[in-house]
Length: 107
Length: 437
Image 1 (cartoon, rainbow over the protein chains, first blue to last red):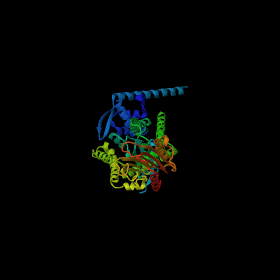
Image 2: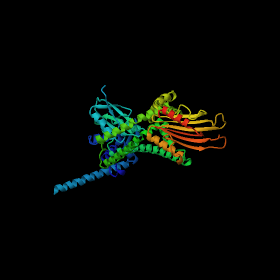
Image 3: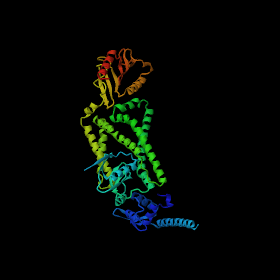
Image 4: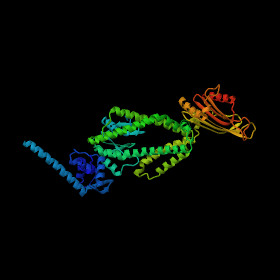
């Protein structure tokens, strides 16, 4: 789900930004996400298009070239910061969960 | 080839119900072959399993080439287009086009809701301006927009008569449509809040909506027939037809390779065919054919006043529901005299007694309170008579205003060539009887 001003990223948003650490066009992003998640995360073409428009508007990604009617994008430094911030948040969540589990196991 | 037809009459907000139906057919092994008149879907056996997605689009603006390329790369092939919907087909198992409820809702708002609002807003604005103009005209020149303006809706054009007739169905239809749209908007927003996909309406609700949509589409048939009759009866302006044809040719003359113009070109081609049909109907001498199915204008076979008058103008209007005749007669006040008088008359053949009652009532108001009694010996005949003297008027000249009602025919005669006698009245009543009034 798209959040206001991207305070947190949805799973689909996260994977789109992750896939764009390498320059890719739309369908390339979809293929990369499917391969990376082993088919667990599927993003619709229409949804991806809307996300790319939004990320580009918020300067998280940049259009690098247009070839064969396909637009290629890549993560910007700002996008990289947003992605790393989300990564840090997810890791923190995982760490918190692990701490709770350890505590439960210890008692 | 084996073919299966399905009525595809879904209101625009039931996009998920339409999509679910296509996917049900796909699961049964059928593939959408074509849409017919945006109302019937033809299915043929699918060689490979397929699935369908319906995607919102703006009818006034093509989706960008990059959007279409991305959908094509993902496996989605456009197989049809209805108002606000693009129909896509892909091999079964392809990820849906929209996988995020909120983004799908935003697309609906951006592509469809805004266009609908502009469309309805424009229509409402035009109607408001027209109402304002009519109000100003009524205030500026009282009497210019009297009850006749409403009554002529039934008598002057078939399209107007049909619209008036269908209004009791069209208005509740519009209310139901708007209510259903609001219901869907609420459901979609709730689904987004719960991070769920948009709900598919239940079978009962879908069936009711489809039947209403189908009925709404069927209402177009009498309206189109009425418009064709008006064209045949020369009520449709020739300049309008030719202007529309020129507009279509201008659109068709644009660069055919430009994607942005393709839909407009398709509409222009369709409109041009329709306009060509209208032009042929307008130019051929078919008003007699239209006359065969329309109500016969009452007493239209000649003058109403004594033989010393000439008909200066005789106008008739007829529709499937009713008809109207208007006369303006002039003649000498006396046999061989030099002074001229006039008579203005109007006769209505109306479809229902209540409407004839209403028209009679309006005329009676014009007669004034002193003339509300029927002429002795004659039922439903009223007369206002006043003396005229001076100028070139002969001795005993009178102004006569006659109101005669026979069945659903109402006749109004206003003249300064009175007094018209009982013989004249009997003659008119006999003619009305011959006319079947």
